[in-house]
Image (cartoon, rainbow, N blue to C red; front, side):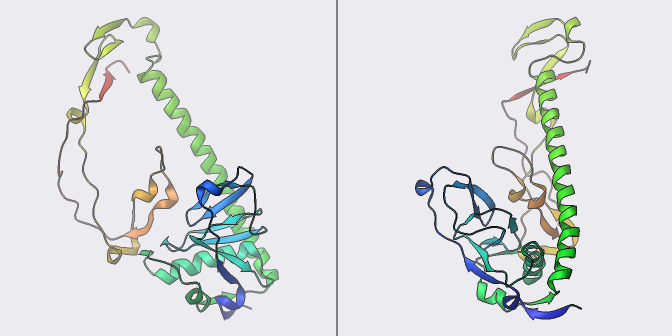
Length: 263
């Protein structure tokens, strides 16, 4: 039977430890910040398994760490699970973190004492183990599918480069190469300025008050990975419908793209 308890009666949160980049020593110990794993070190501060929750940004970023790790001071970690299942506590913190912000809006910082006072639904450890095993099985399946997606995306990039950069598209052996202002390219292909075939517009400005759990997902900077790529879990919870303005500006960019009527 589930009961209601204070979060602080279920687990104890503590602030992480400072570890400037220049002081890190190459190793195998993951360094966990408010945005997840941010590198490695040769020393662990906390024995795994552990749970880390961000102190800054959007409250709700919770990370389960199966091995020993170093939590940075931008995050809180569970210092004491008080006999409860660590993986279940990670799922519990995810629901608490989302509920405590209401809209998932950015907050300046997370007060651990305030978190300890939040009411949570508590289950005995035997039930916790069953809940965690079911949810983790879904998480494992999600990770497998994400790896498959990453492989397919890499294959698509490689095919694009082979066809449209290296010009080794199907049947390229029978297409002569000709000299153009943009360099040598297959006969029948043409170069275009990017602005002639597409236009770019700025994203929509929003505030925390515009977020709504029952509306559409909002793509933001958190979705964009360093160096390119898309992070699906970076979406805000949801966003109310905004009046999308017309094209604010259309710019013509020097980079050219190649098109062919034969592909």
